[in-house]
Image 1 (cartoon, rainbow, N blue to C red):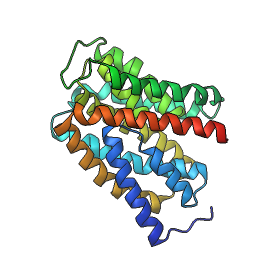
Image 2 (cartoon, rainbow, N blue to C red):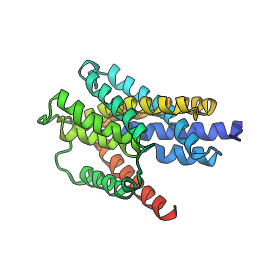
Image 3 (cartoon, one colour):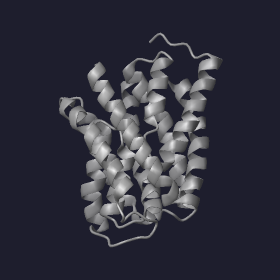
Length: 255
């Protein structure tokens, strides 16, 4: 791979990663910034995806760690869901190498747009917990493993899917749902990253540089999730859902 990391490129991608980490910790969709930036820098698509998983793993780790330290996430109640999300993502990463994902590319923009509409118009969204529909075990073996599989298979909007699952099925308020979504997203990121590392696709120096930016952005965004809650998360999710839908549709028409 013919790629040279200059100081200028490193600084630009560091800044992009910081902004992406901030957005990702609140609403997801940071890959809309980092993946095009990595390809602009000269990385081929597979290397861009692999390096993006490396730096995104850092963002989701630091966001998760912040939420755990401040009591928004009770880790001991989430181990099964974390494990199921990891397994689902690994299975998805394997399956995408065997199955044509074109049908998913067609319907996904509309699914993500639907999430945005739900967050925009639902009167049930608040920071207060509500009735829990699924037990933790059932949630782990359905929503966690299902969204995890999707992340390994395709990926865009995973954080939003996890947050929606926690709101609708686990009964969490929006702030708590966002915090727990980052934990499961960290698990799925690691599973996919392992597959890319085995394949030798990660550009380590660039990925590690962006990891620092991701950590800074994720830490700031996590603070705002806990302090601002629904007032911040709802408009951010709606905005990022719309942006992801437009990006995915435009990719279909330009490919």
